[in-house]
Length: 159
Ligand SMILES: Cc1cc2nc3c(=O)[nH]c(=O)nc-3n(C[C@H](O)[C@H](O)[C@H](O)COP(=O)(O)O)c2cc1C
Image 1 (tube, rainbow, N blue to C red):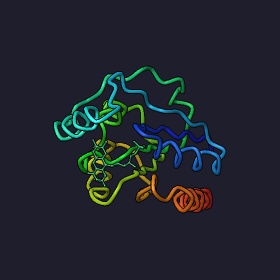
Image 2: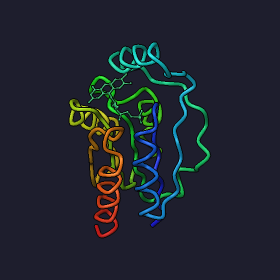
Image 3: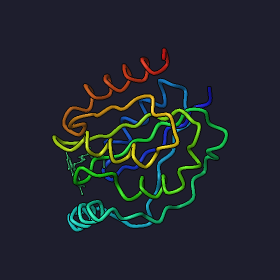
Image 4: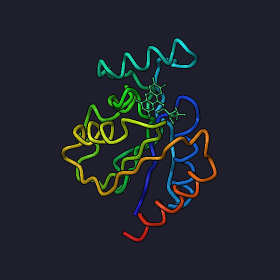
């Protein structure tokens, strides 16, 4: 089964989890790149506002060709309990993900993970979502979360 991990990250937490999951699954791994720069304090404020407004980002083109993958994992940070604009843009054409197995994961600091996962799943109604997972406070507990990510990926391998 050919597997791809796609992720958006602003400060590296979701990259850390994505790379561990991809390594465990021997999957390809690629960041989703938003044209908008959300770094810094102003970026934080703009990110929360854009997530609440359900903004759809403008993305740089993906290197990967989605059609060759059977299983795609999509990772993102929780922003205001919503999907990030980059993931909204990625899923803007849900047909690209139709008939594929999908797993969703988020990193977050304490609240809104289930809402974010549910909103993301709503954007993927033609796909088979086989797993969802939240990773809490990755920045503060990187080693514990890497272990959880490895264990989750091992579970996915079996299923
Ligand atoms: C704009 C913005 C909004 C956020 N909103 C939430 C939130 O609603 N709930 C939460 O638990 N964490 C929230 N966070 C924290 C991030 O989800 C968390 O730190 C995440 O691990 C960051 O991932 P990254 O390093 O891959 O960008 C928010 C962060 C940002 C920048």
